[in-house]
Image 1 (spheres, rainbow, N blue to C red):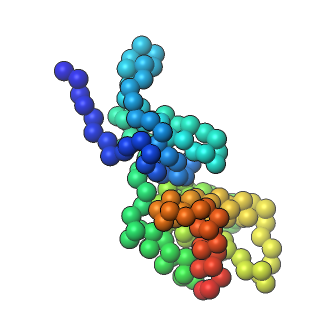
Image 2: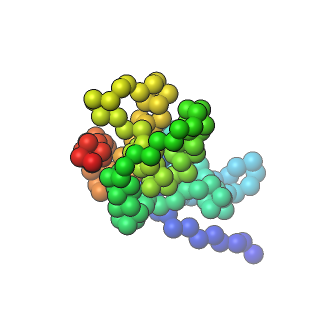
Image 3: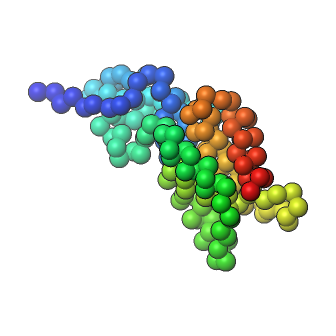
Length: 167
């Protein structure tokens, strides 16, 4: 008896893979790999020019998920409106915490990183590594916001930046 595994994804759906952000499912099909037949979800990340193949049986373990719902994204937007919380710990420790939040794939955690690292023009310049982490977090949050709201990525970045400036 062949075990049939159910999954919530269809070709054309946008999904989030925590380590890479938002991608689009290009195929859900059986493929022969090393003599075994596996059902794979094929996800394309156009921005990175990358293709990811996840066995359906490993979807739960991989962290692959559907886009956030509207309530979760609204929670992320509310987080952006809050006051930045910068800890007085060493930068290397904070950078590690920020990377962990970004790679969690949770929009609210990513919004915390964006909020905490955002600098208005009148504040001293960020270090290179601070700027890199900020850009990575902003990109991840903006791509999910854009896919959820059906807007271009640049519009999503502008919307998020406007929220940060307005606080």
